Length: 99
Image (tube, rainbow, N blue to C red; front, side):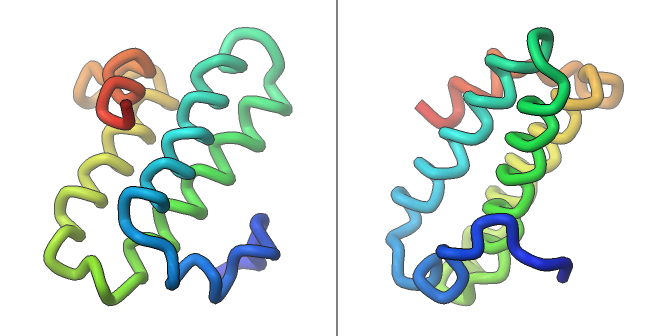
């Protein structure tokens, strides 16, 4: 795994409940959505942070029974980032998931 963008999170992430982890991911997904057509650097930073948080959540052993759902949400987010080429995913759709 590459160095953490969220350096302050590391071990603390494993103590957060799933809803709080997903809330943090949702914030980055929303930020990426907002900046997708406005500022490439801010957009890319939000995408990178969201993916890191998805990966930290997937690595959390407490959610091994939810990994398929979390991995699918990550996959849909990546599809939206890439323009919905594979599944026709949109930021609007993935944002609704996190509300």
